[in-house]
Image 1: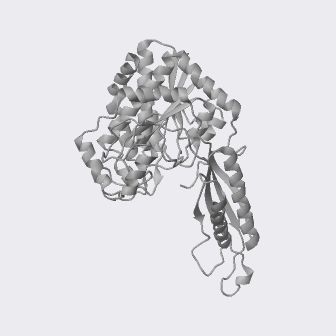
Image 2: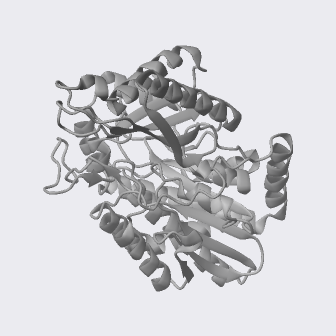
Image 3: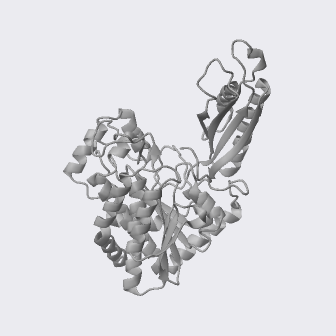
Length: 471
């Protein structure tokens, strides 16, 4: 497999520049669809590396695409760079210490995700040029994965229509192939409108929208007993109607995140939540309207690509962490619970050890505890054969979406893990470009799955990307 080893050298040649890119993006955390500076950094890097760049793809200002090569198969490598609210944290400090004046932080490692994906794409670009082979590599900068579902809109609008294979990754505690299961979701805002009045002098004249929201929440809590065990429903208040308790709240809005194992189950569950909202409005003599903000489908597997990427990981071995990396990981683990650490091992089907950082490749299709989140990569996987890696970039046991994640985002271990997984992605891309049979098997598997279950976009017709979404 000397070709993959050659592509890994291309990764190493560019590694320092992309570590610096990752660190710059870490230092400028931006939320869904607001990643103006982060997107500009990725666009500038694409131009510096000689890609043909298209900005504002699908009408999303912070999305871009860079392409290199001519003819042949089209390999898409997907990157992200959005941050999360409330996770500001100083880097390299194993105690909770938010950065002054900032609320957001890269608590999911998307600074690494985007830079690592672009590093892999750059290596493939150089490899294609040196080999003189037909084929195109594209880097897609995809904003707003954290609820904004930019990729779902991009899939719906045909952005990936001429792509042959999509490759991506996500930071994790272990090196693994991402098990191709996730929850389909809809993000729905429920707005209630009632009637204001003096809460003491004329309470009988008021109709409380806040009461309606609270009754809806109670109803959904009872629903939890009667929905599939792998489904999830979460909520957050967007508008509680004001801060004056002596005024009956005339308006209130709550955001619900409804998740289920597949799209039909999701749509069924969302309809039940809608009925509860209407029931709450009926009880309070208010009116309720709902608006889908974004949505994502569950992931679709592609065993041929998963096997090819796993073979790259096995040849690479685990990342080259050293004693200093492990020492800081131990400090982070001292802030965690034993349950955090055990849960991380069980999720990946790995035996529990005292190792603070990944020191082995997770076996392909290892059976772990199913604790599923959601990702808009799911919709890409329905549009095109797709494979994802997990790259080991943080201490085992670190909870996702935590200050501990943010704290580790610029560490040497994170950089090593990012470079390591970039090699796996680039190597997989080369395997597809050099092996027409692999590409054919990946496409045949994808077509067979779509024949059994055709794709149905979870977004309502005509819905535009929520470029001004809250959070």
